Length: 96
Image 1 (cartoon, helix red, strand yellow):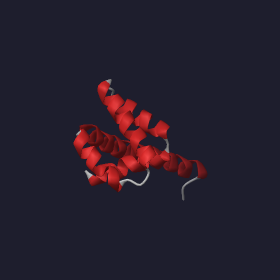
Image 2 (tube, rainbow, N blue to C red):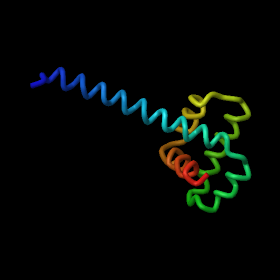
Image 3 (tube, one colour):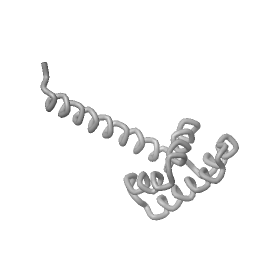
């Protein structure tokens, strides 16, 4: 039987692995979003119900692209917009 400390260490390891996996998935999604054309993104606008958050997300992607920022910088920018923007980014990528 594992001790409390061993179980705690196992949980920390699993949490780090999960975080790394989620970060990779988000980076892949943001990469796809950056590669989408403006026309592609405009076609999706009617399918997104939160128009204000969608516009803030598109502005963040455009600004990041103009500045040639890394995916990490774009990820940070999108996360600062809030959970709704992250969810919309995931939905948009799924629709592309």
